[in-house]
Amino acid sequence: PAFQNLIVNGLVQAADGKKMSKRLKNYPDPVVVINKYGADALRMYLINSPVVRAESLKFKEEGVLGVVKEVFLPWYNAFRFMMQNIERFESTGRKFVPSSEKVCGTSNPTDVWISAATQKLIKYVHEEMQAYRLYTVMPELVRFITQLTNWYVRLNRDRLKGAEGDDADAEVGLQVLYDVLLNMTTVMAPFTPFITEFFYQHLRKMQPSYSESMNGGGSQNPVKPGKSDSVHYLALPSYDPSRLNENAVEAMEKLQAIVELGRNVREKRLINLKTPVKNVVVVLRNPSQNVIESVTGPLKGYILSELNAWELTIVPKENEHEWVTLSLTPDFKKLGKKFGGKMKSVAAAIKSMSHAEAVAVLEKGHLDIEGGTVDALTEMVSKLSFSKEGEEWESASTQEGDAVVAIDCTQDDAILAAGRARELINAIQQLRKNAGLDLKDKVEAFFAENETDPIIEAAVSENVEVFRSKFKGSVPLPKRYAPKWSVEICSENVEVAGSKVQVTLCRPAVAAREGLPDEHSIFLSTLQPDSVEIRSELSFCVDGKSLKVQEGVDFWLSTASMLAATNTVVWL
Image (cartoon, rainbow, N blue to C red; front, side, top):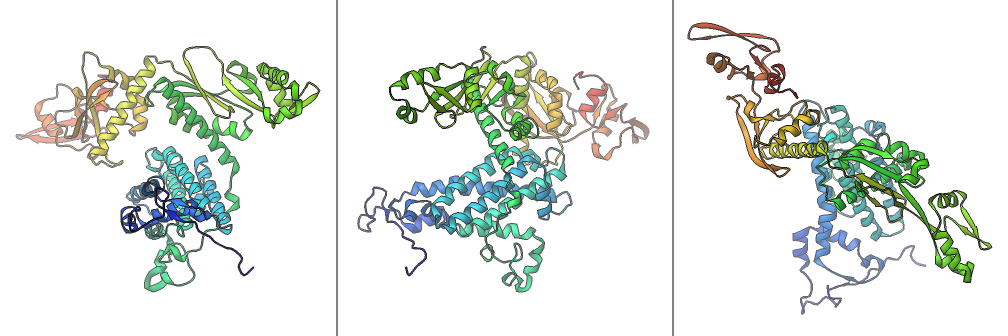
């Protein structure tokens, strides 16, 4: 033939399936659509449509809006989140410089997974473009963006924000996210030329080669990320086979299945995610050793955090019968021809098997019955179902029946107190956000409630370490203990576990012992805690009279320190 590849496009029709007509005006103005949603959204909508498969498309404006919601907004939010946290990282006096060594050297399981998923996406795009299958790219892109935003960023949000106290690990996470977004920007440039150019112009400035773009260097060879003036000068990145980690992908897929089933269980019992649960029990059908080691090791903390659970139990194979029942169902289409009139008795025998008998058949790989053989993998469907007795248990299983998640839904005083504590944490974080406070901004948090039923104080007292972990050593305190000279930043009435609570954020202030003379208190009200050393003695003069106060005796650097030292609040 006179060509190697022939590209045929389908017809774009009006939403009602009729031919687009200027006279009927049965289609939206393309200029209006582009101005409203952007040219990239329209391009992606058409690329993902039957038109590129030489079929007809009923054009709907909602479809273009769907691209914006499902692709561009989550993509932009991940980009913005990264840029905000790089800015936070650099505000500490350090410079963020992209490093492939740090990306490849990370041992964090979610880093390894998202890097592997990125390389898999690059490989996939290369293969599909070579085969001229434009329409397969967007579904894979949407899936990848969901993985990036709903899983990677979500699981690592506190880590990337530096809220876990390890700035070195936070930088590694940002390095990985930067690498993912740069690769994604370059890969998607031919499909979405405008938004990728926007991302690239921000990302390139962090590259060491950016300085080479000066004096016209950005339009010259060789092309480099950073140096080159446009993302469209760059070639599509080639994938790195050494980073295609199937073990990491397998483990994360299992984590996602467990978390999604756990969320379904919570919804069944109407248990708010802010309220913790005691135990999440997981039964997996023939899991690999890699999956078991991952979900009981490095991924365990993520599962507990996502499901707000205290304990995770992976049921070993020898104990499965205590929790679930394995059932087998014959494939009637395949076996009907093989057994004919005997099919009814074969089906009854298979369905009536006990758990132990079904397990034995799967392990053997086949079943000899009625003079024939049934293959356990291809001619039967196996399914796990929860069978443990007890009203405290609620369960959910995958459609394939290869995983069951059960949750102990017991709601005792400790569980309820932990739930209230989490609600208070969320209220304080929201108040910080409303006040425009940064992570590095130190404040003292106070709360006021109905003192005849102090359920919030009880919740704080039982979860002190949770607050210290979340707020870098700080614990919210009853408002009655706040120094009278505390400067209020903001205050808001919120609802915690059905109770009205006033939450107040104040600037850090020193706290004086009870009974200290007024002239001493007046002097202390002028001090900034970070300007005073522990155990230091301060001298001052009032009306010609020389006076002294000592930290740790007359005053302390925070209200919490004072209450703990004087044993006023026993739970600190």
